[in-house]
Length: 318
Image 1 (cartoon, one colour):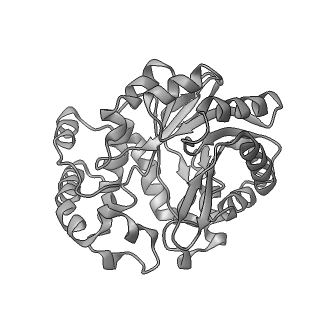
Image 2: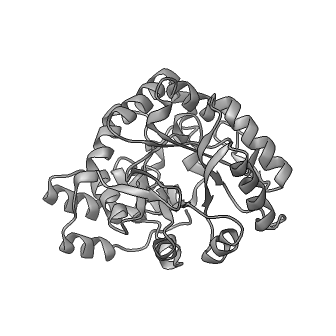
């Protein structure tokens, strides 16, 4: 599998990582199985997946604890990534607010270190920029924690080119994490992916499978568990799901012709957006993990890339 430079850090990581959010937050929480999830994380490491990504928001807090347990005895084999700066107000509705105050971020890092049971986090990401706190203050506080040895590289999540530049003026930005998939292309149209390439910043694409939609397994709201958080997303409402089926159907037909799955084609398309681009699919099963990792060896021919580029825009906000 291709390896990606973690901008300015001297480290590399595999181009397909593992997003752990869905193991304990956001999707079907009643189907949570921590023992199986620990097995999936360890199996991922065995397959060569070394970017393991979590956040203090997920749970809240329980996902970091899960990842910490899974990595006992495997810590040195991974690039451990977490995030801070989003605070959960109501877990039942996933309502959160942004908190980029330096004092909050310092406390959040210490708490994450404790939950993960580590003394150093390889990649710490500002989960969202707080509009009420100058980005320079938030980023400066994290830069101090790098000097203290608690953090390695620093990354941003869901930011603009202008915000990346402001952070860069304070301390190097090693990665930017944003949603990118065949039905969510904002990071391409707003220039962030290209900017990261020019500035030697790794781009980490979360939800490369469209939160599961591009796998072809979600055609109706009834295909999601009743308590699944995706019911709150406009793109997963009945009319939008119906309208968006044409996207996944075209991906499935193309995948059949390549002897691949729709999920593998979707991940391979993300990887084709640049040598600095990492796909970060999430899964709770070993079967889908192996399917996702296999996408790392799928090279899409030019005609397939052209066909995928011509897919219609998704209906509904992401």
